[in-house]
Length: 345
Length: 254
Image (cartoon, rainbow over all chains, first blue to last red; front, side):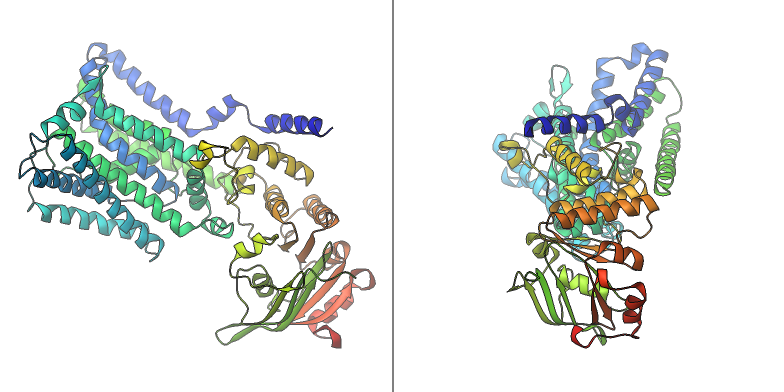
């Protein structure tokens, strides 16, 4: 009797689930993915010879890998209805301090250093990113300063600190070993740096969609007060989310070192905006509560494909930011209209 | 009558110079529906906050199952089987009903995956569906965000969530406000069903006919004090209003 009841009930709960196809088509992610596929198809149709070339694709992926890692962290932050403007500066800080630390333990020049030094450099990069993230998180969750202001502050402070560290110049002396293997090496044609970014992204996607940490991230962004009332430590969770974003920015800084063979202090001023644009393009709501890492992956590649594609088919690449801007504003407008319709019920 | 489940004696609560409670008492017995009524500003919300651990009273004693009770947070109350349906529902609109029901009490997968914090979504969905069916919250689908549901369905999810976890007592602050006729009936039905399972329900409402139809007893607050207690079967709307406005008072109620 008892088992009978159980089976009917579970059958019923399965029936109550929306069918897979309907769930897929209802999701923003599918449409964003289609936009990306259409873009690739259009560029591919115009210049199949140039687009579907191994080196073109390798370059596209490698250049996007660093931004992808930043954007995974940004996805968590934006789902909590926060924002992190500091990721680019934290990346620069981590990249400079890691390069200097590797040089310091190798007697001034780490070019010929071994794996021990490289591991130390990775540790320094990740920890210095984590420290900035923790600082952001504590100021936001304990001191209750709005994320926009806190991270605007650390955006300036981390950049300034990075410039102070080496008197405003780039740091060279990145170990050759690091660049050969991790920076420019490939595995079955896929750049190693891309593999690392893909692993980070996959772990981020699992963390967000299958774990309690992810569930709390959505809950805090959806209704902070409701989360607090059911006993979730909102302050602790927000701290951890900004800590995650900072840590990933630190890792991204190390990846940049490996790829470019130098810790550059400029060129990351708009990383924050690029990451935010990628996350929002990917269907994560800027108002918090919804979003996905898969969407962010699409959101990272749409601007990148547009840029490469426009160059390949001979359109001035200056059109790229304009095209991205239109898609971005349209995406937020759609999200807003949908929310308004929903909340009127 | 049996021993009181929850008893508050002479509670006071000051917010600066404002005295929200001035020696309020309150009693709830197991397996009864007791309504807490009073005009705006009588101290109902403050009393419920003190009894559910959201606020701490300035002075006075709480007894739970006859033993002294100190609630320093809502979690304290929850650990003792006391749940609250807040007036503003306090649900996460972007999460589905099952996720909301298990929010803060997620079921994790067994073994290593659970240790890593991986959710057992299937188990939660199944249990939530069972539970919603049992409490008559009819939802067409269990995996749409709460925000896509109607106001009444949202309310029933909030009510169902609280009664799911309450083993002793549920506070319901205006659970039928802003509901249609059918949904109102359904929530009242749920209240009775919860009572029949032996759980005490404390109902806060402004709707006197509703109070009389669903309650076993009624306690009246006025100016931060209990001024009257009635058996719902022996009283009338006029009497309740009289007690709320001060036209009628019972000496022994305080």
